[in-house]
Length: 195
Image 1: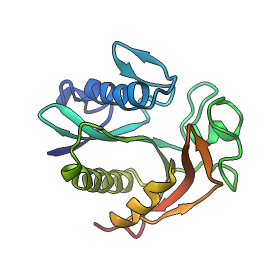
Image 2: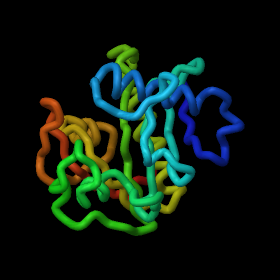
Image 3: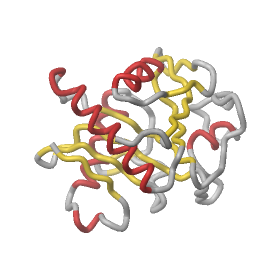
């Protein structure tokens, strides 16, 4: 099992991995979760998949087992910035504007984590190891990018998993219901994560 942080600068070194990340997202979010998201050629993408973002992939033999997208909160592309801020500004119909208890930050040391998934093809015996690899890479990559805080919208149940893998996910907004799944915005302090 390998973990890779992808960017537009290093895509040429990783063959099909970038496309496989978007194919895995398609399976996780469109096929499995049945979310109505943009898609093309069996890949899921949105307006936040820009050259400013980074994509973390846990993979084995070309198959993407899990992934995360990191986006700087300072980035803008047309009317869009990052998902949580745009939802708060009322730009996204599928996410309520009251998702944060404070104004969505714009700062070089804060990055957003989104499109987090673990493939349903990962056997139960491997899930914790895959999740540990993914969270570890998030910490390493976020810190390398200068982030001291990561902001994300996650299932409430993932907060407990965060503690299991050494991340304190502090609630930063109310519980929200997304198709029967309770989710919450969280902040994750990267400055104390030295592993």
